[in-house]
Length: 110
Ligand SMILES: [Zn+2]
Image 1 (cartoon, rainbow, N blue to C red):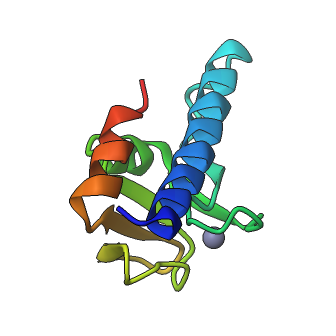
Image 2: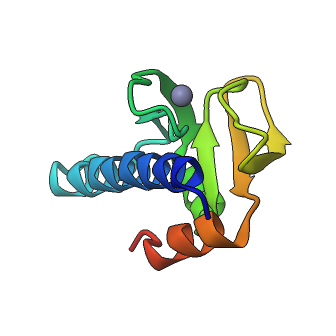
């Protein structure tokens, strides 16, 4: 895999790990039963600070496949990933190449 694809993949993994921590914090604060959460966009742009409002059930479902990430619609990078779901508030991408997809799986949440 080239260095750009790796960097994008690593950025996405970083944002996903922050979101996993957000969820864990919810549980510790006793607000685990919230219906939705303002998660960080998990796109490959390290400077992206946009948020997506995502149902907790949807969040868990999306990340059941570790090669998938939740992003702001339009933040996808077609060279390294493809859109598998498109909603009003968010889109779901899956890593395209074996290298970044494997990297994402190696860093699966949970
Ligand atoms: Zn983004």
